[in-house]
Image 1 (cartoon, one colour):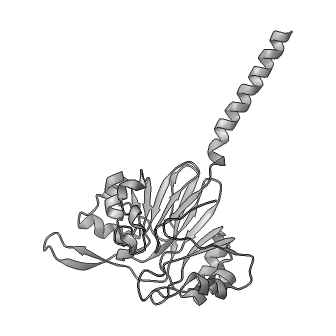
Image 2 (image 1 turned 90 degrees about the vertical axis):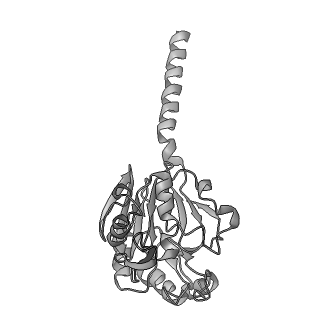
Image 3 (image 1 turned 135 degrees about the vertical axis):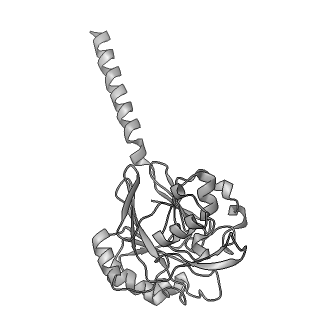
Length: 274
């Protein structure tokens, strides 16, 4: 009798342990690291690493100790919102180094392919409203951004820097394994469909530019956040890297006013878990 009870107890413990092991991935936290401007390293619950607009080596606000692409570790996927140098940044080098596909506006990836900066398998194509499922439980959708997109590259034939078309700028809705949604808006000004995107995708976390001049200033960004998008959380980005980008998190917070939306500020290099 005692032996039978022992076997039953052992079986229960084994089942409990197996269930805990199988659900362990769901208990892992999402991690977001900011490198200043619009550059982020996103680690999903299952450990997949996504780099977004990885302008790192020439970014004046990225801490010196982080200016080593090898320290980023293995990267599984790269997202680039448009062709400007402070967003394309180190994406091509990181893509080749990690054999990681770079998803971006179709025009940017076609230019990079035609000029042989990236092979076609590392520069896949998609367009606004397109959705990819690169990993189990992860969905990434391109959405509109109100900006421009050109890319300056060295022409292999002439050796001269030249400007090329890079498609239309985009933002990304990133849905992770547990349903948590991040809207990285890329560079953008105000546009009315922000309201639609907010209502349709219901982002939990909004990453929004506040610098002004090239993108929304704090007042514009606060209006879009509070009146149109209404996320649970918001983090300001794309400020302070040049004299043109004068908007500050304090101005954004003041413009946001009294609201249930949680605004948080990160310093370059900081990591936040969700």
